[in-house]
Structures are given as C-alpha cells and as structure tokens.
Amino acid sequence: MKTALSTLLNIEFPVIMAPMFLVTNVEMMVAAGESGITGCIPALNYRTIEDLKVALREIKDRSKAPLGVNLIVNKSNIHWKKQLHQCLDSGVDYFLTSLGSPEEVIRESRKTGAKVFCDVVDVKYARKVEDLGADGVVAVNSGAGGHRGEIPATVLVPLLKSKCKIPVIAAGGVGTGSGILSMLALGADGVSIGSPYIPTHESGVNTEYKQACIQYGAEDIVATNKISGTPCTVINTPYMKKIGTDQNAVEVFLNHNRKLKKYAKMLTAYRGMKMLEKAAFSATYNTIWVAGSSIEFSHEMLSVKQVTEKLKTEFHEAHKALITTLG
Image (tube, rainbow, N blue to C red; front, top):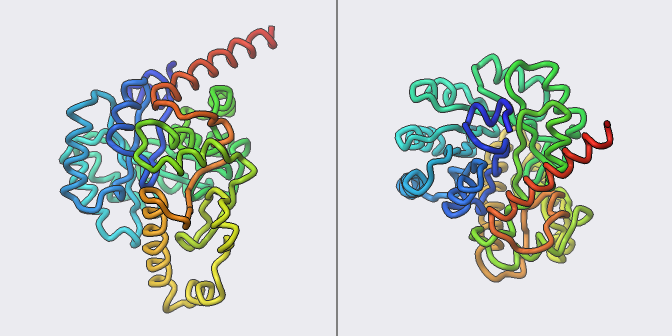
C-alpha cells in the first residue's frame, strides 16, 4: 500500500505500532518491523539514558525497519532533552512527540533527517506544529487508549485533513483491518494502533494484564484522572471499581491550586507511574491496566506478526467487500 505515511517511512503497511508505556519493548519493535509495519517505543520505558542507548542499539542491530521513539516534551519529563540527543546519536528514524512543544525536537531532527510526528487533539495545536515544521500529526481521538482526545475520529480526521497540509495519522479505537480501511476512507494517511498488541507473546507485561485485554471488552474501559491528573483510559477491574476513577478532595484541591498545581501534577504522575509499573510486572491486587476500547477485538494471545497479519487480511477482505458493494 502506498500512503503518505508508508512513503515517508518506507513501510509495507501504513501502521505504527503505538508507543505504550511499560508495554513496548525491544522484542515487539523487532517483530513489528519484520511484519511490515513500524514500531514506536517510549523513551520513558527506560530508567536511564544508558539503558535507552543499549535498547536502541539492539533494535538497530536486529531490524532494518524504521525506528521510532516517543518523547514526552513537557516539564514532567526532566530528561527529555538528554533522551532526544541520545536518540539522534543512535540514528532514530522518527519521533512521536506528546504533551508539550515539539519545536526543539523538530529543529534538532532536521540535522539528521529524522521525521517528527506530533500528537494533537484539535485543529489549533495541529496548525501550530505544522507551522513549526512537523512532518505529520497524530490525531488522538476519543477512542484512544491511555491519554485520549475528546473528538471522535469521524470528526477529527477529516477536520485535520481539511485544515492541514501535512499527513494525518489516526490514533484510537482501531483494532481490525476494516477499522484501518475506515480511517483511510476518512482521509487518514496511516493509523497508530496500540491496545491489540498488548496481549502478544513478545509483550513484557505479566500474563494477568494480557489476559485482561482478552477477557474484558470495550464496555469495560473507563477514564480515570488518578494516574496523571488528566483523564487516562484503563480497564475497569474490581480494584478500579473499589478505588473509583476520580481524584479525592485533597488531590482536586492540590491540582487546582495555582501555586501547587505544577508540583501536584508531577507527584500524581510519579505515583501513577509506580502504580502502573507494579501492576504490569508483578503479582498484585492493585490492578490498574491501561488499555483502549479496541481490546474488544482481542480474543487470544498471538504474536506481534500474527496480529499484524490478521489486520492485513481483514483490511483486504473489507476492501474487496467494499468494491463489490459499490459495484
């Protein structure tokens, strides 16, 4: 398939395996490349710059596919500038930026030829990053897992296509090949898919997390602000039902106090990251597992390649059915 995304990154199928905090790892990245798509890994999945360096070197050694890294570029990530320069030194092919201004990432990436795609949830921010020189925008819609937007894909994708000249990548709610076709029909140049890749053999999270993505469905996804201070989608496990999805009175006060807001958000995010890490990698009853509604289409544990091949098959079947319907 030839779309703006597949041409920019020289990939067979216009899909980015979305960067997933604590989930995406080296094995998944290599497998994604072997299956004809590209993977993007969060820099925050590594505790130190040296750990990040080692991981990027291993991916580059084992895969010829384009290597993407997700950078959080706001004040909550005090290491992002060091992460940026390590990635550039390691030959990263593209960045996906989130939660902040990508201006410095874009400027520095021009020196190596790395592409920069930016998470956006509305036209205003999309136009800003386009003016800064971004190579594309990732349209984070209301169906996305983790931190999501407020606008549904059926509105956000065509809206951004009508207002921006750079490629638009749809992110959120896609877990089937027909879903990919629908995003392309809306005008998207590619799709970012995350949750269907959580319950894969290569994924490093515990079996309980993977099984939850298989056993639960779209109706079990809820948004909570307990993890980072802003709405984040998680599986509504018994533990989540017990603690509730809303911040308590003290947390609400701290997050709305002008002097304390910055520090309260950083504390909330740090505590949330530790809670997620414990739930993802160790046996615990405190099960807070991030996922999106597209887990609805995960019915068994597969490999990354099998998930991708399933998406490709479904896409081509949906395309043929559409051609037949249209005559």
